[in-house]
Image (tube, rainbow, N blue to C red; front, side, top):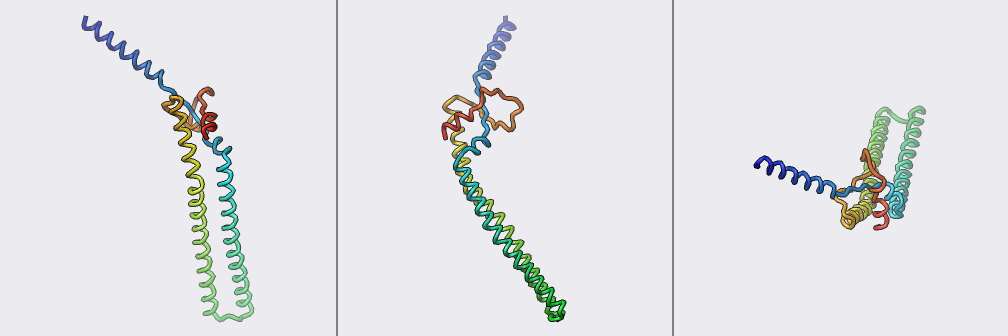
Amino acid sequence: MKKFLKVGSLFILMCFAAINVQAQKFGYVNSQAILAEMPEVKQAEANLEALQKQLQKKLQDGMNKLQQDYIAIQQKVERGELSPKQQEDEAKKLQDRQNQLAQEEQGMVQQIQEKRAKELNPILEKVNKAIADVAKENGFQFIFEQGVLLYFEESQDVSALVKAKL
């Protein structure tokens, strides 16, 4: 009798576990496709591209000026207008300017990264909130990113629901 109760209890627990697993609802979303369609993202990318072009032009102008100065000094050396001490001084000045340009380039990269975060973080937060809202409204326990799923059913794609929420 005790064995029958143990087996019966185990059977009932397994049934409840199976029901709980079946009750969980999973979905997936393609956030890259959603972001690509958002006008805010397109505007942010345009702003970043404009900033990047502006910074690149400034850096290129500095590099061109450095190159012109190098050629001018080289011509003076060939004509014998600079003493060895003056040559060393000029070479040091050029090296310092080259180092300064390298630092400016690193600063520009950092500035672009900061601008990208400033522009895109609010958009990403908006998309994440929409995903969370869709999950709550439709009873999804889990929503995955499509790019990392090994298998999925098209019927579980909640991207359209997220787009509608935005």
